[in-house]
Structures are given as C-alpha cells and as structure tokens.
Length: 357
Length: 77
Image (cartoon, rainbow over all chains, first blue to last red; front, top):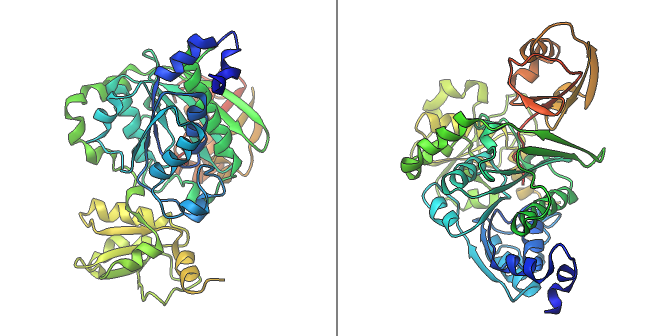
C-alpha cells in the first residue's frame, strides 16, 4: 500500500513493522492540545484501532492549538469531531469515539480493550485515574503534560516500570496547580509534547529504540532545553493502587482531588434557572460585577459564611481568573454543598459576556 | 559546595528565576529546602519533587552533587 511507503522503506520498520502498527490498539484520553497531535500522527501512521475519550465540546479558544478542529466543528463533541477528521486522514483504520467522561466506573473496562493508553487530559483528577486504571489493567501509559512554555513526557507502567505516583504520590491540593485555560499556553507547545507522545507510542508498538520508561523528559520551549530525569520505582505506591483493585470502581471520591469536573462557562451558567452567584474575591478587587447580583464572600471568610449560601439554588462561584473559585468549590464539596460550580475565567468572563468588544 | 538549582514550571514564578547558584554547607535535601523556604516563603505551598544529578530523590537524601532541580507536577493538556 503506497500510503505507508515511507514507513515500509525504513529497514527498521518494513512491512512487518507496519503490520504491527495495524494490529495495535491505542486509547487516547482527551482530544485537546495534546490529544490532537497524538491522534493525528497515530491515525496517519496506521495504528489499526484508535479510541478517543472526550466529553468536552470544541470552542473557538481551542483552535489556537487543537489542530484537528476548525470553525465548522465549533460546538461539536471533541471525540466525535476528531473521529470525523481522522477518518478523512486515514479511512483504512478503525476509530471509536467515546463522547463521555472517563470515570472510575468505565475506565477499567475501556482500558481492557486497548494495548496502550495515552494521557492527553488537562486535570489531575483524570490523570491519577488514568494512571491507576493503567496499573490495574497492566497497560503501558504514555503521559504528557504542559504548563505555559514547558512540557513533560514519560512512559509509565511499562514492563513493571515506575508509575506517575512514583514521582508524585498524591494529587496536589484542589486549585493549587492551574491548567492552560487559566494561565495560557504557547499554541505549538502541546504540538511538540503530543508529537513526542505519539513517537513513544510508535516505539512501543514497533519495539524500536528505548522507551521513555523510568524517565521524565522536561522540555522548555523558550530555552529549547531538555532535561531527562531518572525516576525510581516505588513499590509501595504501586502496591497501594493494586491493593485497591477490587474496590476501584467504588473509589470515585478518591479521584475528586480536584474540582475541574465542577467548572462551568458563563454561557452554561446563565442557562441554569435558579442560580446564586458568589464573588469570592477580596472586597478591594476590581472590576466589580454587579450585573449578576453576586453575594460577596471573600474566600478567606467563606468558611464562616455558609449561611449566606442558598442550598435551593445552583451556586456559581467566581473570582478573578477561576483559580480561587475552584478552591471555594472544593471547600463547599468538603462541607457537603455539592450543587456548586467554579466559573471558568472568572469575573472577566461575565464582563466580556455582557459587554463584548 | 556551590549548588546550581534549576526551577521548573510554576516554581519559577515564585523564585523569579529559572536557575541560581549558591553556597550550601549543610547535609540533606530537607536542609536545602529549609533554606529555600526562608528565601521564598511561597515555595512552601507548592507541590514539587527534587532531583539531584538528574535523578529524582527523596527529601532525606544527602546532597552530594552540585546539580539540583525542583520539579512541580503539570496539569495542562
């Protein structure tokens, strides 16, 4: 087949290697900044079976880096939109879209159907879930993560190698580490890191070179510096996960370490019928947002003022940029107030919605 | 011993630099962190791991190399 000619003429791959690619089954979780380049290269390379998990929809602010999407797919589910684009790139492979959230309930059965798992998500809740489910199902995990101008790549759970928990045993506190939607990211960075992830997947399938197992590669796009750290396996961290194998599905709350799952956009917040907006910024912070008539409770005083929260309503919490509001949601969750959401991009999103430029 | 310390990701926003060198005469990673925490109080609130000679090490490891890196987890994708 002429499609794969440039692979086949490589003596390291050949028809035999191409056949391995066509028999491989890879599950990519998150079709965002990282997932898009991963999926694009894996589909083009002829990975025979691809799964795509993403519950999110395509927004205009994604187009700066999420290269599988365009104006024609705005508002569509990312897994479905990616599948459609990839089928045009390579109609000879089988692609399944899962337009849903990855949860402790569906992760294990989903992972069981694939050989390799790729983490392209944007929050720690899902990253720890993916790591643990990969361990439990004994699947290699190709990990990538980004922050502003820097990225990390690694292969975990490969031939009894280290897992993500061997580096970072427990998830960071809610809201303590921002993601791309909060602090921004250079558009090409996920392209670079995602392409490195795709490269690791191809190496694993083809049995070529040295997989990035037991290593954590750190890349800085501004200095073009790369540093590869050695990661030692922690048997305790790994057995802690494997010990909970049988009750894994019941442990959903373990993964609620972060509140990304409770984020809401201003558009969706305003669709709710009975809402209370709460501004958790300090009283001196500008600009004021009177248009949604918020209750003013600075985050530092929230714990003393639960009485100001109307339990009958959906609670939309905002701050300046959407970081403190996540901490507030975590605090309310801890105190059994669950119908609350952190407003994406904070006060500025509200102002922009009511006064677009 | 003159240590060269590299900071990654959000840690550079606390330290306002990617790299610095300073004289260290104590023993373990924990001792080093004590010094860094008094220099950068906000660092204490950050999650990170420490590498020595490009190997991730535990907090009680004795510092025997001049090359140290502080690495936070990244969420973004």
